[in-house]
Image (tube, rainbow, N blue to C red; front, top):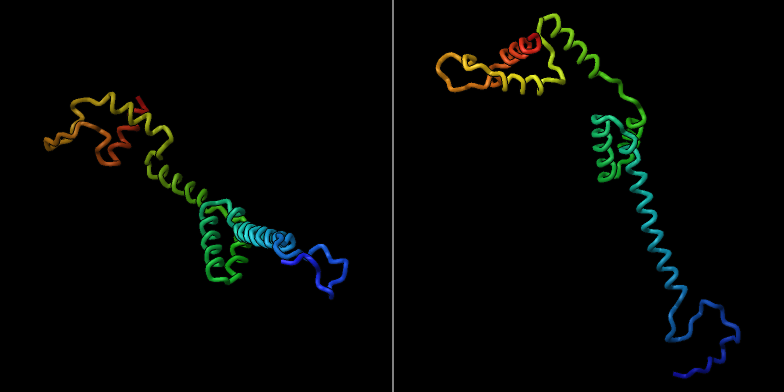
Length: 163
C-alpha cells in the first residue's frame, strides 16, 4: 500500500477519518453506546412494567395485578397495564376480618369452642394423658383420642382445658 495521500485530499482531515488498516474509534464508540442504550432501555421498560406488581400489597391484589401485567406484556394491550396500576394503587377493603368475626360469634352462639392458637400444645397434652379406656366402641385398635371425629376432639380438648 502506498502511504502518500491522494491529490484531492486536503491537508487537514477530521479526527473521525481513519487511515486504511487502523481501528475506527467512532464506530467502536457508537457500537458500545448503542448496546448500552438498548440494554438500558430494556431494563427501564421491564422496571416500569413491573411497577404495579411491586405496589400490590395484599396476596389477592398482587395475583390479579400480576396476571394483568403478564397480559399486557404478551398481548401489547396497554390498557391491562393501566388497569393493573390503578388496581395496585387502590387499597382493597378488608372483607376477611368481619367474616371471621361473624364466624366466631356464630360459634360462640352455638356453644362450639373456637379453635385457638394453643391447639398443638393441647393435643400433645391429650396424647400424653390418654387413658386406655378412651378407645372407641366396636373393638377398633385406635388408641389415639385425637383421631376421633372432629366434635369429639374438641370436646376432649375443652375438658382438658377445664381440668
